[in-house]
Image 1 (cartoon, rainbow, N blue to C red):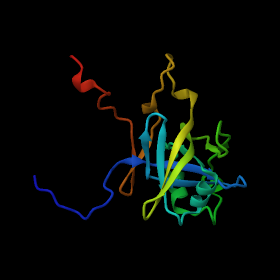
Image 2: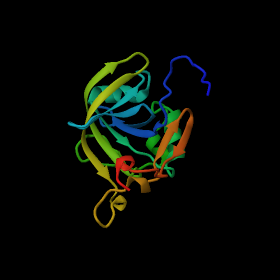
Image 3: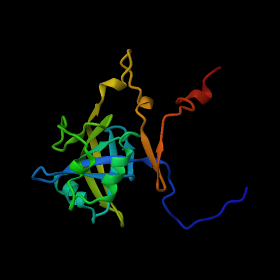
Image 4: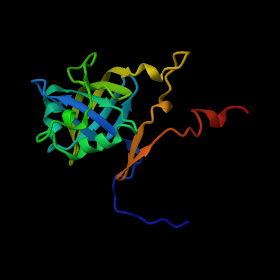
Length: 187
């Protein structure tokens, strides 16, 4: 097999298509669609988001130190995309998208009610990396829709119709190929 070498770039894919909710110090909320989202630590639980300083949401996260990562589903994807291409400086993204604000349990930022999982975060550190500022944040609460728990109270995220993003395309997740450790289990 021959391979072609490309110039260095972010080829990690797929990545989450996440809808980030934030608010300024006066409580004015906004939404921003991000793919630069990832887990960075287990104890304490931490994740990161990377935002360009030029984005309208950047100053909100910078000044309050809080945001919510709202996981997205195939039913939400059209409006998630819209929230990524219109500016909160010119449009009320909550109104434009039809998403519903819901009070968070810890942070002073609204959750997206339609999202099956809302991850409430408090910024621990912000690091300017060049084109983006990476906000490293501690997860302070996780809110999950009750309908995704089975009769034994186990969470089944595979039933959520979650969406990922890969180089300009949104992808539906859900086809289970194996489970953690299945490759070494005795048959």
